[in-house]
Image (cartoon, rainbow, N blue to C red; front, side):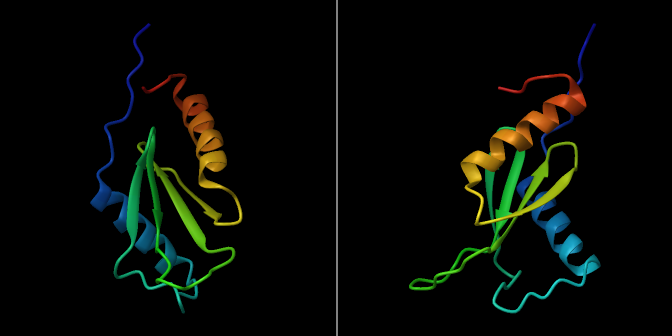
Length: 101
């Protein structure tokens, strides 16, 4: 049996998907400017977020995860990214019956 994994999604595509999701959901972006989001690669996709400004403290700030298969999940800074990413990867593996290294 051959397993075919989805192609890696680009940073730009992940950011564009998050922007569109936020617009489609009519989310309030006050204090969360989508002009300069950051995307950090994780094993099966990207973690997309808007960094805080120097000296700014933000609780429950939105963090989005976009998998290489296009699945988008929303979390927040109240859940450690290292913890969320493990479960995000597990769900990806369940969808594809695979492990990406």
